[in-house]
Image (cartoon, rainbow, N blue to C red):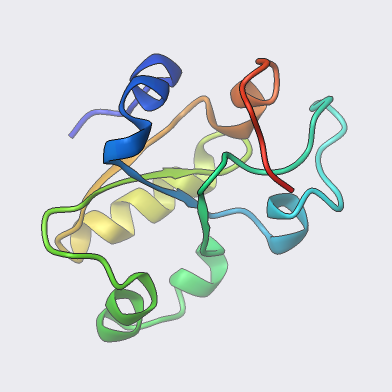
Length: 116
């Protein structure tokens, strides 16, 4: 499955489950990378730190996400690296997962809404 870009993400936002795999302090906007003028997360994104995800078993991940079979999941982080790891892990578990490679680094440069 291919990566998702910002255009597709914004056009299909209501059809997707967006997963923010950054640290909690990045997700809640209390601290972030200096290269981003805006801090927070994509509205409606579910927080699931990739470090936590990678220490869990399949059953725990499925229970934590609680998603119906076939749900399309899009993972993002700051620059697309952690979200790529999360995407691969989710795909290995059978999830329909894609990576938003532009991630927060790209999203934060837009005037699209955010949450903190």
